[in-house]
Image (cartoon, rainbow, N blue to C red; front, side, top):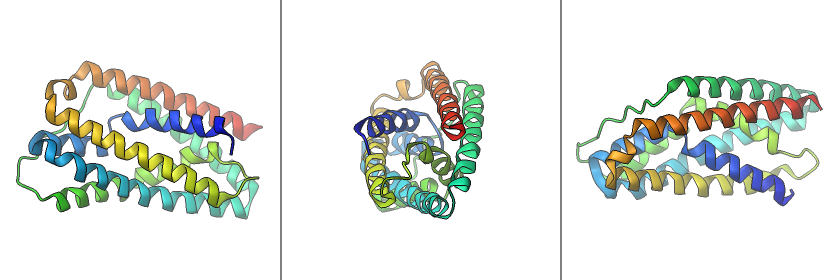
Length: 206
């Protein structure tokens, strides 16, 4: 794996992680209601959830890659269409971010478990990884090596992103609830999702 491919993955994953979604909404909700104490357990729960979803996705992609290069190409085309659809949907979302504060007293363990469940068991997470990861995989390189590198990188980024959202939401609620900032994130993320979809389609056609 070249450093350029890894750097591209880091850049794409970082931008995609900061786009508000179900996991971010949950983190912000707990941070608004519980304060800074929610930051660490929520970040750990999100990382564990992403580990679960990403592992299942990578195993599925790996099985297709081993079975047939043709099926892997079909998966890339489907992934490209899915990413473009997500981008259009995100652009139309505007500046909405409905995150009601969770004020009921909750233990750190329960917060972590809730974050894991929302992140890992959301079918959209697995579908997203299946669509997102193939564009960075090289069939000529060990799949296990690529899986370890990409998973470790993504989990570190996911942990940092969730922790950052929680800290900001607990200390600067006006910023976390700013509809203009959210709209900017959504539209920037939508543009990048569509661009990623088009890039995937281009690589699938080669």
